[in-house]
Length: 134
Image (tube, rainbow, N blue to C red; front, side, top):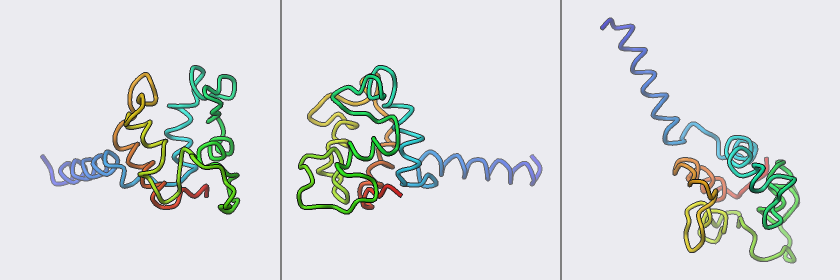
């Protein structure tokens, strides 16, 4: 194998490894909604605008954020925010979303098969970093 071919193979392995562990993917709401929640959860049989199982519409960034975090994107936390949100910013251990994605004490979501661990870890990192909608 030529040195150029070795270099290309090494770069491809490095990129693949980074993508597999999620370190190159941003823990940002825009990305998480577009790459994970919308295609996996906002489907016709689950949490789309039309079906909204359990009253949960994850079809748009705005509605998904409002339902999951319990406040409108960009609004500051307020003492009268409803308790029991699916996401508690900065507190992944209290966030029902993670419990459901991991199948802890409840059925695993999505019901047709769990998300890859790397995607759940990315959502956990987003929550840990404050669950910003930016």
